[in-house]
Amino acid sequence: MKKLIIISLLIFSSTLFADTNIGVRIQAPIGNSVNVNLDFKSDNHRYDKRYKNFDYQRNGYYDDYGYFFGYFDSRGYFYNNIFFTYNSKYRYKDRINHKRNFSPKHVHYRPYKYHKVNNWNKARNYRKENQTIYGKYYDRNHHRRNK
Image 1 (tube, rainbow, N blue to C red):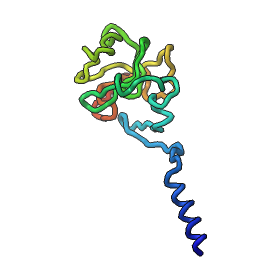
Image 2 (image 1 turned 45 degrees about the vertical axis):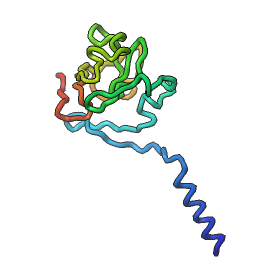
Image 3 (image 1 turned 120 degrees about the horizontal axis):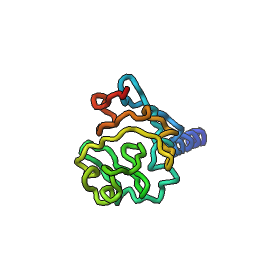
Image 4 (image 1 turned 90 degrees about the vertical axis):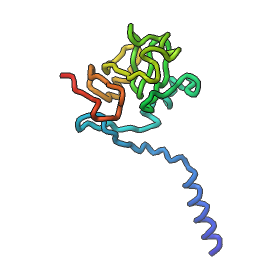
């Protein structure tokens, strides 16, 4: 009887410490009756092999809304898990120095695009192409549809 209790306790305790990543999806509202399935490990750039060497502690930061300005390099950057390329308003130099439109207090405002230099947006399809993203990524009131 003691052996049976010990074996069942060992089996139960091993399941507590096992990797629980079984691909559980969470639905998050992002617009008028639109939901995005979020699978945090496979669907977050912080867990993607391409960006594993980026120093998120040193170079990543959050805006006033608490949303993450993530990975960046000389070709583009992530904001709220969406990839953008640089342009005349959102420049690489400003991104490095957290200035102008990359200031943590500045509301991020860009249209959702597919980019040839990085297929992240096309593969995940969070929004319709050319739909403008207004700062608060998950707030329904800040999203408008482009027709």
